[in-house]
Length: 322
Ligand SMILES: NC(=O)c1ccc[n+]([C@@H]2O[C@H](COP(=O)([O-])OP(=O)(O)OC[C@H]3O[C@@H](n4cnc5c(N)ncnc54)[C@H](O)[C@@H]3O)[C@@H](O)[C@H]2O)c1
Ligand SMILES: O=C(O)C[C@H](O)C(=O)O
Image (tube, rainbow, N blue to C red; front, side, top):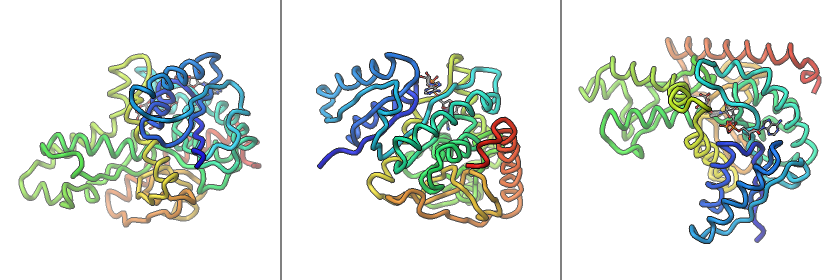
C-alpha cells in the first residue's frame, strides 16, 4: 500500500519537529517546503538518516517549489514568522497574512484535496485567511491551537494534583490569544470536574485561577524563556494528533479552530471549539452549553478574533471575493 504524502509548509522549528514525528509515528512520506533554500532539504535528509537508528520507513524530501505538494493528503502550515519577547501574536498579522495568501494559492493549485492544518499566528485569523486564499471546503481547513492550550492546562493540572497527565482532561476554547477560555467545568481528573475537586479539598479556587492564568500566558512564558522564537515541541505534537485523527479516521474529539456558520451564534469565523476529526475532515462541531462567565468570556474572545479578521479584510480586501 502506498504511503500517504504529508506536506509540511514551513520547515522551521515546528516544521522540523513535525517531520521527525511523522517519521517516528510512520504516518506517511514527508515533503518539507520552505522559501529558505537548503533548509527543507537539509532537515529532510538529517531526519531520513535517523530512520535506520529509530527503525522507521518513510521517504523524506525537501523543496522550494510548490509543485512538491502535488497529491498531498495532509498539509500542515507553519510558514511565516514567530513572535519574540515583548510582542503579541497579533503583531504578526500583516506579515503572516501575505504568507497565507501565497501558501493558500499553492495548496489550491497542487493539493486541493488535502486536509489542511494551519498553525501560523495569529492563528484564528490566519486559518480564516488560508481558507479564503485556498478556496478549500471549510471542513478541510482547520487551525491548531486548542489542543496545545488544553495540553498546557492538562499538564499544569496534573502537576498540581500529582496525578498522571493521562487522567486529566481539559478544554480550552475561544481564540488563541490572551482571551482564550479554559473551561474549568469541562476539565476533569478521572471524570471529576475541577469545581468538585475544589469542594473535595484537592486544591483551592485560588490555585485553579492561577493555573488558568498560566495556561492563558503559556505561549508568552516560553517566548520569554527562549528569547529567539516560540514553542515548537508541544505545538508540533498537537498538530500531529489532529493529522493522525484524519489519516486514521479516529474521530477524536479535539478543540480546534473550526469554521463556524451559526454554531455558538458565530458566523463566518474560525474560533476554537470542540470538533470531531475523521476521514472527512471536521465531521462535527460539538456545541457544548456555555453559561454565565464562560459564555461572557467566549463572546469576548470571539470579539477579539473578529477584530483580527476585520483587519485582514482591510489589508487584503480581495480575499473576500474568494
Ligand atoms: N497555533 C499555535 O498554537 C502556534 C504554536 C506555536 C507557534 N505558532 C506559530 O507558528 C509559526 C511558525 O513557528 P516556528 O517556530 O516554526 O517559526 P520558524 O521561524 O522556526 O519557521 C517558520 C518558517 O517559515 C518559513 N517561511 C517564511 N515565509 C515563508 C513563505 N512565504 N513561504 C514558505 N515558508 C516561509 C521560514 O523560512 C521559516 O523556516 C509562527 O507564526 C508561530 O507564531 C503557532
Ligand atoms: O506564543 C506564541 O507566540 C506561539 C504559540 O502561539 C504558543 O502558544 O506557544
